[in-house]
Structure formats: C-alpha cells, structure tokens
Image (cartoon, one colour):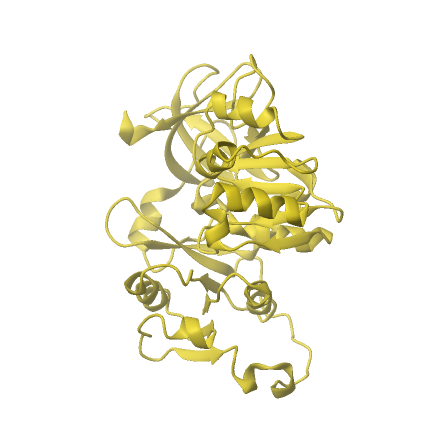
Length: 346
C-alpha cells in the first residue's frame, strides 16, 4: 500500500501510474486536507511508503514505519533508479487503490477497489459517454474523491489531453471559466455545485463541450441551463463502493425526465423491496448494485463489509454479490432508473 500526497501537478499522475504498474495499491491524499485526517488515512491504510514532495511530506505527522520517497530529492530522479523491466505481479482481484469516504458518522472508512473494477470502469467510459484522442479533459476534482479517476486515468487510455487545474481555480467560477477557455477544454466533469458556480459567472464555453455531472442529484433547472450551453450533458451516478459511476444517462431537454439512466458495462442494478423482492416499474425500492464494479470491501473492516456487501438472490438466476446502496430508486416503463433520495432521509 502506497500513500500519494502530491499537489496538482504532472507528477501526481505519474505517481498514480507508477504505483499501479509496480503492482501496488495507492491511497490518494489531498495535501489540502487537515493534517489529522491525512495522518489517520495513512495509518489506517497500513501504507508502508509515502510518495510526496518536500513541501507536502511536512504537512502532517507520519505514522511509525512509513518510508517517505521525497520526489524533490536527488535519489528520486530517474538517474538514481535501476533500469529494469517490471514483472507483472498483480491479478484482477488485487486492490488498485483505497479511497477514504467522508462517512456520515465516525472516522473515514477506506474502500478497497480492485484492478478488475477499475479496468471495467475505464473500458466502459471509453465507449459511453465516450472519449477520444482529440479531447481535452479539464481535471478539477480532488484526488481523494474517486471520480478523479475519470479525469486522471481515462484520458490516458485513449490518448486525450489532461489539463490539471488548481483547487483555487476549481473553487472560483470566474477563474474556472477563464481556465476552460484557455485550455480549450472539450470535457468537464463536475458536481452540480461547481456547475452552478460557472453559471453564476456567466460562463459560455469557448468550444463545444461535453458536461458530465455527478456526485449529487441533477435538478431540472440546472440541466436546462447547461443544455443551453453544452454539446452534451450526461448525468452519472455511483457510490465509491461500486467504482466511480455505475449508471449513466444522457440528459435531454424537457419534458424528458432527468434520470440516472442504465448500468454501465458488466454492471447490474436491482430495485428491491424490504423483503428482497424485485420491484416492478414505477414502484420505489432500495437500489442494490452487482457486477464487475464492486469493491473488495471496506479496508480492514470485515464486519462493515459483511453488512453492506451481501451475497444473495435478486430475482431469477444464481446468487451474486451485491452492494446495498441505501438509496431509494425506481424503474420507469422505458427502462430508465430514477434516483429518489436516501432511505434514511425519508
């Protein structure tokens, strides 16, 4: 397990790729997070190495036994490394990363995501919503939020360009609008809150842009405002425990409903009653997710893993491992999924 605490610069992307190529699992640590939280995540993960710069390595107290590779030090340069090919040493079931979710109660919990799930997500996103070598992806999401994988890894799989924008730029609608124009972005993924910041800054895209929206519900009024400005608008849904996005929908103008669409590749979603029965279209129930996107579970928390990840039947067929989202949803007659909020908020 390798912690990565690097500011938003090219070496951050290189570090992610290096850990994956070496057969490790990375724990992304945003240097802007409180020192206590960073120290907890590094200790709880069991990381044995921290990739950092001279500046970020001193931002928090290191747990005992963690070795620091200072990327600013001379020995971290290519001249100081052994030139030999890496032997593949990972399987599809090995962890690729551990992401810490904020958690509604208590301390953050780590979600261990395997290579199988990450690869499936990236391959599915290549096809829909789709990305090509001609795209320029503006990356604004903190590396400690799992959706950053779409911005930092997906472009590399198709030869697209990544424009790493600072957290200060991402938090200011006017600065973000200017940055998008300067880098000629063609794709931006953001939460509804960030999209509203742009709209409040009177943003108009400099070139045709595809907008990906997720992390929170997409209201109809925001969807309409974005549809008036962008080439395509996509609504994406998924818990960290099922690897970034599990369902996607292209949003159309009203009167079409804003839905969370259908599952991505090799993903199955079920709307179940409290008794575990499949709900028919129009009838709300709890959303459960299965397929190749499932996480290994909560890192070092077997009891919580057993509570949220269960193996059972969801209609006809063999039993399968499912993740219980705690979200309320319903299918419509067109086979589109509607998100209705959290069960514990009703």
